[in-house]
Length: 171
Image 1 (cartoon, helix red, strand yellow):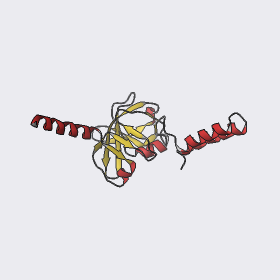
Image 2 (cartoon, one colour):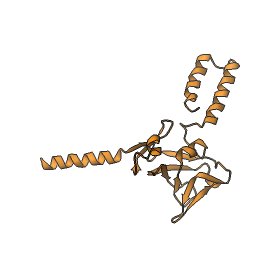
Image 3 (cartoon, helix red, strand yellow):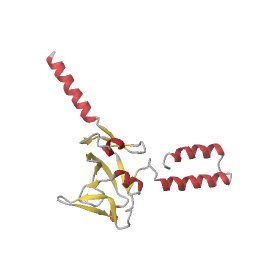
Image 4 (cartoon, helix red, strand yellow):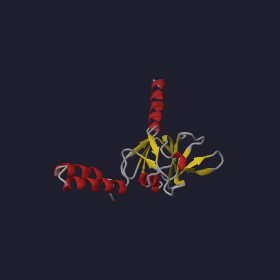
């Protein structure tokens, strides 16, 4: 009986520790601290360990504003040469009101990456997720859909469906 109880407690702890989720609101209000397996972004999209993301283009053309490379004892901005590389989320951790995402090494780089402002990196295109569009991207696509409607290339019903999908990315 004791072994069964002990086994149950161990299983509960294991399941609880592997299912840690943190949301955007919990990060900015400092409600949870530590390491997590899943982050639910402000737009409701979830990002988990082992998810793959693409490194986009730097916001300021030379170096990334939100993505740093860990060079052992120091952190340096990632250079534009990493653009287009695929990375895998390895660790999700909070620091005060900041969420840090650590990823695998992009193609051709020696150091792991640290994303201090994940929401900013997504919004500015420094990180790309196929299921996420920036407001500018969504507006551009919506305008193209409107042009198709005006040219009678799609029906009003098709336009309304596409508009509903894009509207969630427009604030």
